[in-house]
Length: 173
Image (cartoon, rainbow, N blue to C red; front, side):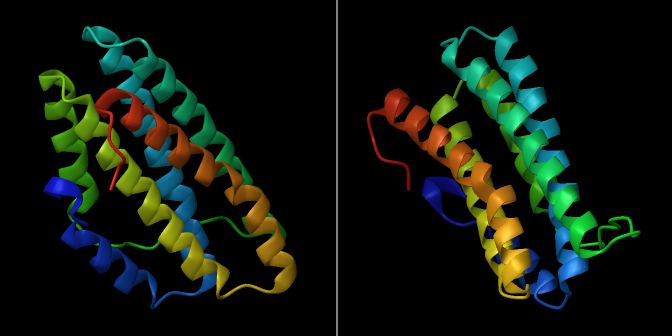
């Protein structure tokens, strides 16, 4: 994933999800959004321990809060589409997210904020690709509901892109 390359596991995730129906994909999205919220919160706590520009921990906290709101929106959409059912995420067996998390921790303590932000942008991009896949499987009413829940997706990506530009003086890949 160095130099902005898309990690190998992204295609694996998308391939596995392409075999699933809307309920399973939405369940996966909910679970991943909660994991992402946890990741942002851990980054928020860790970044407060190192001497960084204070914009970084504030941004991680904001991203954490946005991810929780998104997860709530996706749960509401799930309840609307599948009343009386509970989201049960399918097992999507890929090593990527664990490797990503381990790599992020090393980057936090080395102080490489630009690379951390670049990784997080790629994580948000993956989420967008999964949502696009789900959107293609939904009715028009459900697409509208997904669109409302998805609004924060672009917000997080843009906040990360803005921080990357401020920290590096370059455009993120």
